[in-house]
Image (cartoon, rainbow over all chains, first blue to last red; front, side, top):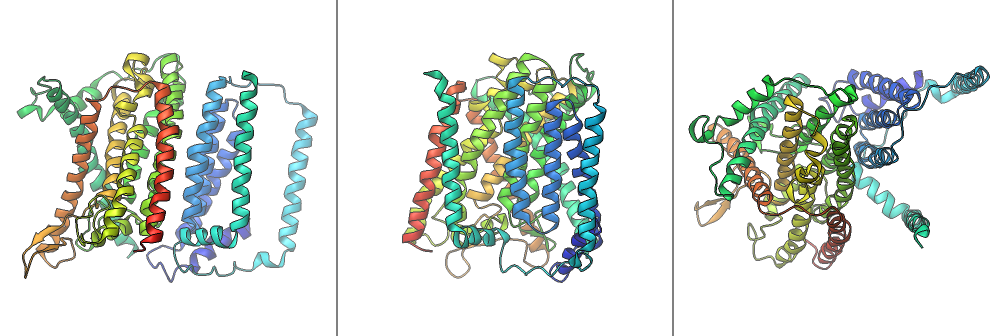
Length: 192
Length: 368
């Protein structure tokens, strides 16, 4: 947790020279606000009994995530996060939930063994991550300076995708196309 | 310095929303009624004030004073949330649109971010939630059908919307909206190659894919704002009132205002991308004929007058587009639902794709 906080603060101070109009304390505060928002609504996705409410909580969670990206000056990734996940994928989710007319899940009795098991696994994971981060040398050092971008981050991402990683990009494109055709073939089969 | 920035940003936000967008919304409702009356050979609202000009004030009072009734079967939290979600994205989009050059040295846009157009698409894609939640929380058949229709319609047309603007970015090379306006000031508007260096054949050639882009983009904006050839989510003859059937008084008014605000921001995006933004070339005879650029950079009162002139130009262009929106609504009949889907997926999607190729080929063989 301490490491996270430092990431938010030091990245901002790196950019103080280029952008003197920003208040350096602000992003740290915004970091805590948006992470809290993400955690609360992430939990709400699981806790809510109503599928529509769960889906909408996930949308708010995505908005918090994109705000975190934007506070790191990654405008493109932040905006794409909203455009693709909050604006398209979740709308489709909501569409399917409404079409299937899923009702709110009934409350079941809490299984004591499963409950303690779940809590134990979560605690063990937390303790592991915590101990590893405490032993990590780099954890108490400030985040290394980001390379100052030569141009817009959109342009940088474009060059990376279509220049350095052109072949993987094309392969992913073909893979997605195959998946799309597969879905159409599978869903049309019943009609014959 | 940060306080100056915060103060001017707040003033711009308040000024744009309360002094420009909201009055424009209420008067575009008035214009809609008057123009539709003109088209149908009626009189329209002409009783309140001279030529009915105070009609929006009377309408607002009626909405505010009407009983705020909540039906018994609705999901209360989401029922209240939906009208706000319909209104907010429509207004938040205006933040990145440059609506003027500068006034007192302050640039006339709220946030100049490098992903300008993507921000517009991202926020606009959230607009569907207001309609979907309204349809779902009303717990009634017709609103629900309206919500489902709106979801599939918006997803279908968002694709053409995004693809239609790619030729512009191939040409300009940036997503920032101020850069696009700057480019159009230097090279002529996207749709008007005769402004500026009109003997350049490349500009005339590029105007063809730009015109196609403009048509696809405008049609997609019609579909995104649920305007009449595509107003399936609220088709009165099929779905009573569509997604807002169960709403009354101010909550209904918010849906209504959200639709018009979305129209205004959509027109503002079209103006910025294709029609030169706040730029209007003024003929000048100062040592031979040439087009002069009027903006807010001149010293003294001429700068202030220039800045105000640019803002007026921008919103005049928006108003002309709004009139076209109204004109189309009262001229064309509504599409059938399968026709709407086929139009989006089979025609506009492909036209936009081919258009990108044409623009890329022109740019590859006639580099700027």
